[in-house]
Image 1 (cartoon, rainbow, N blue to C red):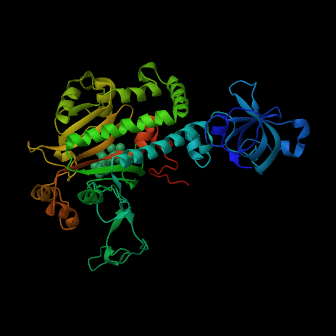
Image 2 (cartoon, rainbow, N blue to C red):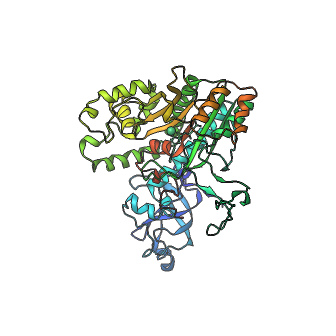
Image 3 (spheres, helix red, strand yellow):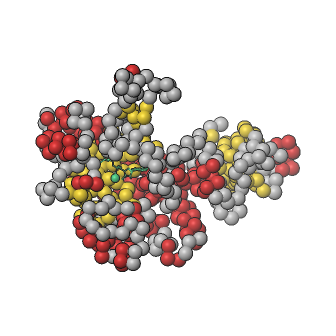
Length: 477
Ligand code: 4AD
Ligand code: MG
């Protein structure tokens, strides 16, 4: 008989029909009541075993974590918290789980502990909810762009360029690193390496994305990116997923509109499709916040925060205005920032971004027109000679969730800027060809997927929204 999923069973009218269900035991009480879960929902299905007619050898093997196949009749439930239950006629043990040794006991475990057993944490309510929401968000992103005629472009994982020019790359080599070939000068000779040159894992698919946008008009990437930045924070991963749309015939304003529309669209889909999971996560967050002092707790719960983002336009502010707000803030005057804001030109730290969003504007903020010195070489230079047409979207509790810009489409200006900051013009000749042949105004942005998942799930550490996090000194599983 075909297996039914628990999510569907729980929404079925019970007419004593015979069904088969398979899943893992969460708990087994009084030798009678199994709470069974198959990952389709956080709600368990209650299976009632007739212990008088079930062999002792089977009963003993119904332990937390064991995999079962159950056939029985679906009947109304008299118990609290469920409308249906299964009266088992047969219970088959598919896989035993030694209750003494099973690391996931039916009790509350800390998120830190669960990170150490990330191979099993999918089986908890919290991670069940997180990864179902993550799945919905990934699908919603594709739907958003596909519905608007964007072409999904697979940009390379291994590259020989540094898209962000920040030098935070993981090298890719097939050399014996204890003994690599050297040239006459004693430098490692990459011309003998696998690709005949020095290569690395990509930090961004943008440069290749721009090439494709110059043919398809609108494209997006959605893939893994890698950064060897030594940031051991709750918001940085060495391997993360990024969504990068790139649009021809598009300026900074259009770019902001697409980003805002996309974020609101995917959050709305998650609320529609995963309301139960988000309600669960909202409660989890409230519990977690109770541990914090009153003044550090957020004013809105998770559900309200998400709805608030859907109902309010994001605030659009220039970097220059933001610096003024920060400089004049009581926070700055009372030296509550770790990094004080004293002059125009400084890079914003996440404490500043969060102040603007959480304390000052109290809604998502799009900051534009940053000083060119603190942004990447490809951003379009504004007429003031000082700023570039950049945009960062800042979210409550997260800080920067999106980074993007209008691109410098004027060959001469781009080349001058590249030379100024030492980006090799020769090596990026293929990139500059887009400016030589049919250049046009274009823009794009990168959304950090895990930061989006953090926001929508209300989790507080980015290590808890990607299945197997890679961070400095940590690459388990
Ligand atoms: O601001 P970033 O560095 O921008 C780019 O890479 C551009 N090429 C994007 C573009 O215009 N096509 O990164 C974009 C986003 C950030 O806003 C952040 O959400 C996320 O990627 N991000 C990270 N997420 C997790 N861990 C890290 N180490 C991240 N670094 C950036
Ligand atoms: Mg950025």
